[in-house]
Image 1 (cartoon, rainbow, N blue to C red):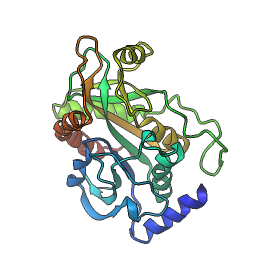
Image 2 (image 1 turned 90 degrees about the vertical axis):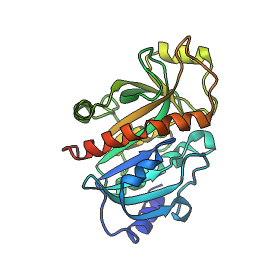
Image 3 (image 1 turned 90 degrees about the horizontal axis):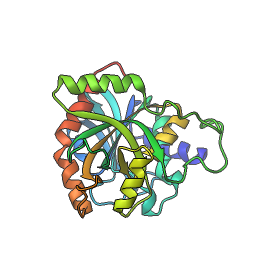
Image 4 (image 1 turned 120 degrees about the vertical axis):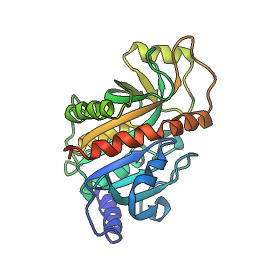
Length: 271
């Protein structure tokens, strides 16, 4: 794997003359944050050696290099999912590349189903912990040059950054919750009984991404901050039939809040 990571990194470094400080993954319906970036170059995934190509509607599929809130960043406008048929190593490959490019912090966003009765569609949830119900991306032979065989996950989401995010949200009048995110494979949305089960084991929201990326980020010793847009509800009495288009619409409606918070957070001493 290291050979592929190096090959991909070398290709990108020939097109980008500087080192990014932070990486951002823009999830379902949240790709418009890219409009706030002072873009130097945007490279379509299809042009990048060894990169998968996003097949999901709402994921544009390009790697953006530029400046946001005075920070040099690299942003994935569209991510890869296990349910698309990619291996977990392919899903998380971009994290390895961003680490080799020099990032110190990974910011992850997603759209998720809210399981907490206090949540409403359009709310933001800062992720404080996760429950992994997907195959672990570290299964298989470990390369010690990339990270340890048994990485600790007790502090997956940086507590100091979480505290700053709450302060930033309050200053800007943005309502946020803090909670636990559960990751499932998809691509089906959950049944009422699955929603109940996942909430019972301790999750406040459920989605089909993020956790594999976070596991690899922590394996790589990167700081992590992650936030979910609550795009639908899996709460008893509030469960309705949902489509991917509705999830995209709900996430898009919350984009101004997400964009504001990430922009203001990047101005803080978090890297």
